[in-house]
Image (cartoon, rainbow, N blue to C red; front, side, top):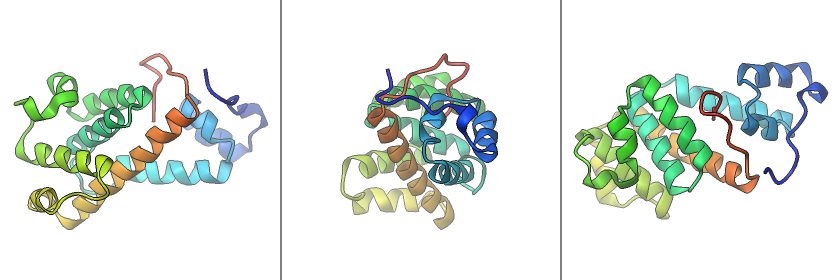
Length: 175
């Protein structure tokens, strides 16, 4: 159960209700909309991460799901395994993300992105070797997008866990 009550869309501004409706009134967004201005900007950046830029969507979703795993955020893991399937992540890849290093279902770029993700989440900064490996696979723009995606979803995972956001049925989970 969430640590504080979810906001009630009935009490929200028209703009906040519009954004909530667009996001199916998911629990994460109902919690976040307690702060309407932050909520709106969060959604803008999240939309840019998920729908703009040049980073391969499969690489992005693998990195986001791995971030959720490392941050121990079940809501995020469930949501992004589903989103990943919609952009081409295979069931085998989703299943292998817990122990991706031992899996053979990832190509070199995906493996480099997952190693980069692991180090962003676990270390102060990625090591030179891991940074050089991913920088050799991505354009500067895609590299920036990958780092910002991982950082954004560290924040999102921590938000979900801080407020103990309730899971929703798989068909409804977004985030």
